[in-house]
Length: 305
Image (cartoon, rainbow, N blue to C red; front, side, top):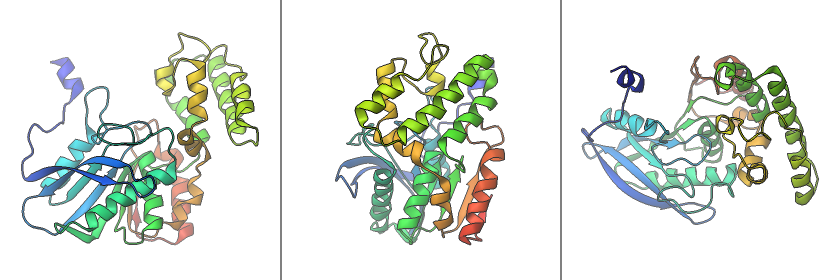
């Protein structure tokens, strides 16, 4: 019973009050097929609609966790019962979607999100004037970039919104997740220095082969270089070669190069930004002040926090 209480399962057993369709649509850039589920409320519509955009990494349309939790399925179920259509899709290279996640960048993901928008706008059951995005973490970035490109986007809802660059996020997470990591002060200082040097290398003008060599030489005797280090907590492979391959992928470069100040002032549609005070990855204490400043800079007064 204690284990059941900790698990707190939310996954709906059956789809009631709406219907679900397995669909496909094609990305705008690479013409790859993306597999998706569209949930439509009962009736003829036209319905408002939300497109769900996942966190960083390879996620299926439900954004399934290793624990079995499926937050996007839970969200789609709730919204469609409330009269809102929901489209959720597998990331590139995951499930029914073609392509490669690691070989893609934010611009590619934005074009995928816009392809989803275009698909919904052509469905007779959908009110094309009421289609927007609900993004989680990295998905908040893609939602903002899509809303800048497509002025017909009706809204963005940002869950775990990002207000600072990746390196600042990483440093903040390291401090807030101290109990989970259980790292020594030596290890923490080494990790901070590791990411500082890594950031410089990624953004340097070095040739790719020289970047590989430089990254391989970053001191990590007490952390990433140890086989028994908890690499999974940092979402990193244990093998050095695979870590370097990850760091130099288009996906990671997009992560490391992104700055919210370049995006958020340009978003003009209504927005709702929700960060949890217990969220150690995107804590509101760190992210809300800069986000509020960027929104104010852009003159968008229709944003709630």
